Length: 89
Image (cartoon, rainbow, N blue to C red; front, side, top):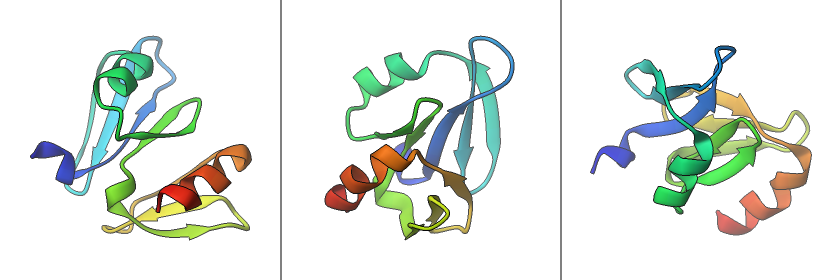
């Protein structure tokens, strides 16, 4: 399954554009995070601009709110989402 390689989806500065980050590359495309979240409910909303793949998370730094993935890619998540993410993992 392709989702084994996906770290996260995030919005870009351009309207209606998303960035898909995998362990190999980053790809930008037109889309909406809400649509992706509805279609793939196992993804975790870590921030209003980020959908994380919890199965790829290696480490969560609670002080900086930084999530590090298996391939050492990282992104920040919202403070209010930390406790829910810890419960999932």
